[in-house]
Amino acid sequence: MKAVQTLEKCLEFALRWACIVLFSALVILVVYQVAQRQVLIPIGLMKTGFAWTEAMGRYVFIWLGLLGAAYVIGENDDVAIDFLVRQFPAVVARIVECVAHAVVAFFAVWVMIYGGWRYVTKTWDQTVELLPFSQGQLYSVLLISGALIAVYSLIHFVRALVRKAEVRDEDDIDICGLQDEGI
Image 1: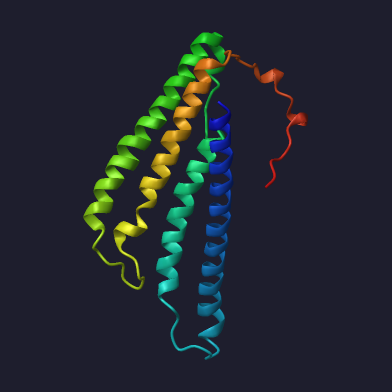
Image 2 (image 1 turned 90 degrees about the horizontal axis):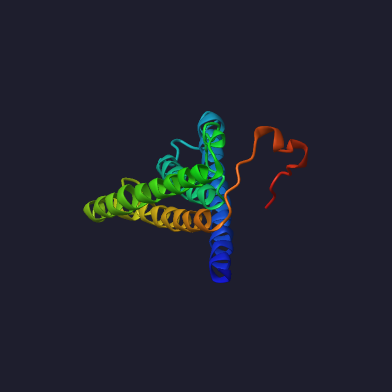
């Protein structure tokens, strides 16, 4: 179990920094586009803008969204509407949690990995206008994030099976005791 925790910490660290770098790149690209269109072109410092920044911003946004989803699922902080689940006995709540993790893993494997593989192989040779990448290279993030989500879902599934099931009532949650997570 220690090896799994080490793997999780390494993946979390890598994903967190990948998201930070991608978000920073996205901000720089978008700010540059706005400055270029609203300042540099109107005052005559540039005749036309760099069209590649818009295309690159779009793909950075896609990568950030998919890798961010893998990060959130890894942290087990994904959106969960568990009001109804908390009304069930502890054993039933654990079964529902296991089913939820299994469904997420199935989606990651079937849609993101299998479907992503089919899409990436079909588009590997198609060039992206304005960028030195192929469509397949840019959409390979489907495979990466799908694999990460599947691994995280499997880990969460196993943990849900082995730990003692607890159902906390809404009144038992101490909101004052919650702390913001930091980097």
